[in-house]
Length: 434
Image (tube, rainbow, N blue to C red):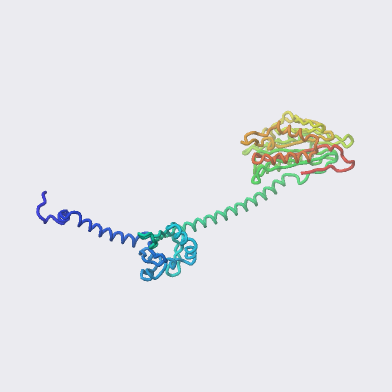
């Protein structure tokens, strides 16, 4: 449709007059929009003279603080809007940095609200300069930080709660470790007995204070001449293993008093464990049980022992040699209804020591990558270096060796050494350590 005449509307009139009319209208609308945006912006705006006197402020900031424009513009300084703490920070940090840099942003302050309330804000300011470079005024933007403050308070509360939980967990862990230590000690002898013509020493190293181990040892008299000893390792960890350990120690002691033959003692233990744990959760152990009979006249000691799936004992000779005491046969105790056990014998001369240990020692991880097991051969070489030393010196050296494994020690380790002193004092008791 063709348009004719001036009745076609203002569009054509504006068009005929060029761009002046729409440009003026757009400028007017833009001016209104800018002013409205300034007044009702989501953040606060204010302009101050260089002495801090407020020259202009938007409605948003006035609403936040509960103030009237007439009471602020030309009557208050920016610092009058701040709390005492905010004013102090402004004077000592904010204002000097602003003068130095000409602008500063994201500074946390607190502003006063009508009625005595406080409002956390983030403030950014920039100095406006004139054509000659002289500072004219300061334009400041104020962001509401109440949500951020609430978040920070929640975060602080969460940190406090977490810290309290951590302290409680540490206290609970300390009590647990103390209880475990007490229970662990109850599974071991308080001290080794004094044996005429013999020295003894023992050591127990827990891989972790948070786990109850299943390693055990004991030495006790059978009659006036013979002494029984044993050392072993129950499968598993925790209370279940502790129960098996307690049953094992009781059974070994009782069986030895009835029939001290090492094979008979292990046979009895095998029967008890298999019958007790054959259904549901099988439980078994490895153990060395032996009889030692010191001879006061010859200064020697005869040893008879049997092993049930346990690492062989080591004999450290006074002449500097060391070797394993072979114990043929010997299955894990409790794994089958019946199990064959065989007796091995040796004689300890003055200066000789018999060493028993659990596999936590030989299975310790070594090397920089902690992937190599310490092993039987390394232990044999270590023992040979300490052959001829008394039991307490051997155990002390092994304790230092265990220290050196650090976090490579994954399993508990029990050590028991029995030796004949090189020069026993007539009528004196030999030294015994645990």
